[in-house]
Length: 323
Ligand code: DGY
Image (tube, rainbow, N blue to C red; front, side):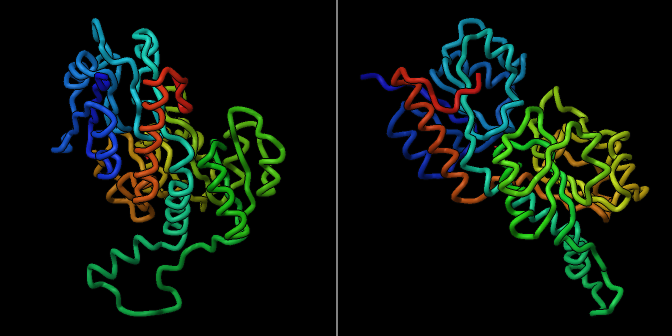
């Protein structure tokens, strides 16, 4: 039997690549070079399945293909706002993602960022590495206590829920939640959380705000200058969702003029480009999109793609179909 042809757009964990090569007529991107929209367009004409990841651009231009060969885009990653939904639908393509398996690790990074910014860990490490540490003193790099404070979670999907568990059960934090739809009372009860109606209701109540909503046009600049103004002047903003959810210019102003306590970001609008102004902000911690970057999560994401492909080519509905 002829194996379906599959193109993988970036390097994946070795065990997953090996399994892909066994199951399919697989072309790997051994050079790990990002593909352009033109490369993606070309791939959609030649392969039965294209396996992109969250940093590939599958916008309307890349999906503007006559006679596509590809029937499934099996994305490596939970977010899929980089895939133009109307174009994928028009082409009749199935799109899948990789939820669940990265939720704990992404929440771990959100918690890491929360602790780092509250306790000024980034500043401390920079000081020490630059040889400027002059020793312990009562007023040195004094931060903010985390335990018992109020955490606002915007977007109460799987990752938001994991964040709530860590913050509530690990640090005794009070949890306030904003979510597009009503959250089941049992889910809220697990962390003694309260759901509020809107982002505007949530922001003024919180010492920390962590973003866990999807990216894309619907949530672009959800956190803008007006909303940053609604935060307490000593509150911290954490983003492990998508860069575009925050109006970066407004955040830079808020950090530079100390309108909020600080921020911690794992994702950036237009990443990997980082605004030079962000680099000037001492009250900011930044990581290079490490949310799911554990051996365990990255392998599990790959095997989840394999499950989705297996179902699709066996004529079953893939469990993680999003389009
Ligand atoms: C995702 O999966 O959407 C993350 O941003 C990368 O793990």
